[in-house]
Image 1 (tube, rainbow, N blue to C red):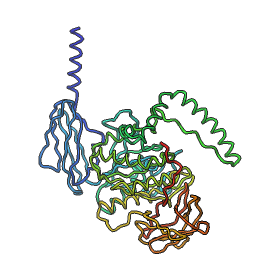
Image 2 (image 1 turned 90 degrees about the horizontal axis):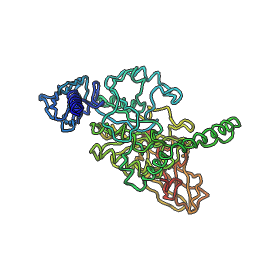
Image 3 (image 1 turned 180 degrees about the vertical axis):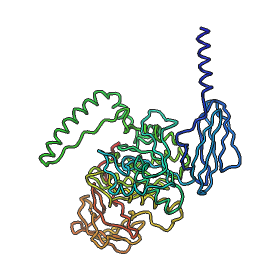
Image 4 (image 1 turned 30 degrees about the horizontal axis):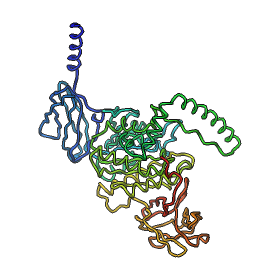
Length: 513
């Protein structure tokens, strides 16, 4: 007994003696720190271990003591970008030195496959940019640094992740950098001269609930059904999985026949969400967002929504709730959050775009990029990511980097007035409404029977006048209200108008949770 107790004590003391100062993966050489602000550093050590931090841009050494659990945190003021590479060291019983640090602008890049979409694509999944070879040849940019967070799920919030800060070169850019975020960063660097650090935390095929704290989902009656379905599926996984495999086998057989006969192809069965699925609610938040908090960032760019289209009306609340969740975590109620409205595709309904428009109109410090001119009815991953990244950069440049006079948005529906047998529609961001010399397309109008007819639409100053001979007493207008619209309403900045409707009639996904 005494020998066993002695061995236990010896091993415990040995483990403590081997404990050392450790930093999260986010803190490493080649990183970018948010410039000219107080930035957070944190890590782990032995309980009550004394740690000294020396930053070469400060005259003093910071000394602190880890708490009883070995956790420690420090806040250090950074400088404005000074065209120098900096160093910082963390010393306890061991020492960690981080080199080649730049002060600049740090942006978190989240979402699903259209955000994770790499420059040269992935064989069998993404085709890549049309001009990927040319883009990569020009990708030597020491002011652009990026880290891609390890893609994994977790049932519990994690303290750390895996990832490596890389300097942008043709070789590193050919890897796992988001193409959208790459072009976003290029514009910021070109217009400001500041370094940009990109933290890529994204994963294809994922819904917003995967990126949301479990507590948010548990405490809202509209979101709780997500957890109920998930828990029931996991509990009966064996039977549900077997049924899915059987249904999929039958689907593939019928799809092959339909393809050969050029007839309507069947709908694929929905893949069930198991415990290890990246579609699991809250598990990506635990594994890929929680470890990043409270790393000091400028803001977020986001490209997601495709996997929430089947419950698009719920997304009107779920997406803002996720944004608020992140703002609470970062203790910044004005954390900039700029996102991309989903492009036209045969699987993407108008209601998901409306949910994103609703978020833009109702959540402060957000900006939305419209991409109705960049869709592909067959491929859900439009290949022109430069256009998307450039448009996202307009919001950042306008709101944070001194370009106050640029227009960052296309026309956004504001109000409508019934004028006899026609309806006048008003917009924000309406300077220079144009259809580039062509007749306006994708306008529909309806009366009390809620039946919509193609409408004639004309530009009259800063209004659009909409009418139809088939609707004598109009009540509502809809614009680009379908899966794959081809609208042509722009403003003078060349930015497309968002799809919209003037009515509040019940829509297909309303009530689906």
